[in-house]
Length: 212
Ligand SMILES: O=P(O)(O)OC[C@H]1O[C@H](OP(=O)(O)OP(=O)(O)O)[C@H](O)[C@@H]1O
Ligand SMILES: O=c1cc[nH]c(=O)[nH]1
Ligand SMILES: [Mg+2]
Image (cartoon, rainbow, N blue to C red; front, side, top):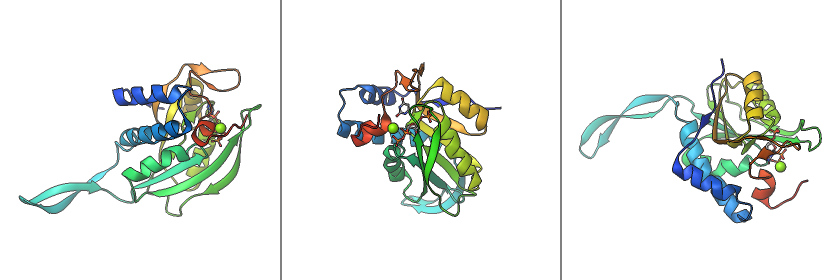
């Protein structure tokens, strides 16, 4: 059974997301807002990490604190727009490993092709948080997660800024075990496979390009 996506409803998220969607927001502003939202996404995406007790000496005396258990985290960025979320996540968890998967969506068929794959060796045992701002048809996210599973990952979260119902349904069919954390569940896809209301092309807005 697949879980429903976790949608962040915090006022800060809603405020920043509105600025992000606004087509008059500059490239620099878009990049900064994406980074800020990634910190808030990371907070929710890491909610279930296991803790173990740790003895420390506080200024007032000994106490039992807590620290993260085991081998911790691996972030996986789906190139290229996933990199917009990566730096903020690494600010929060600087020791995380990082994998990269290069995927390009064909504008006509909406199918994806892989052009790059590089994962750390010690992925089994780590929680993998796969990053991409957009879950549209879900083809990119599902293909990336198939590859992450082939690398040995078992505990996987997919974190995005916007999700379309079509993408959520595709992920629930292909990877029902993967939790989806998003800042918004939008209305639908348009006839070109773009999210409505959406924010346009995330990669282009992050990097100041125009790829269609
Ligand atoms: O859910 P889907 O229908 O697969 O669409 C979502 C994908 O499309 C965009 O990437 P794109 O292929 O445009 O590459 P880019 O990040 O290099 O711009 C986006 O960053 C996702 O990876
Ligand atoms: O709306 C969309 C859909 C896919 N990719 C994007 O960047 N935006
Ligand atoms: Mg793009």
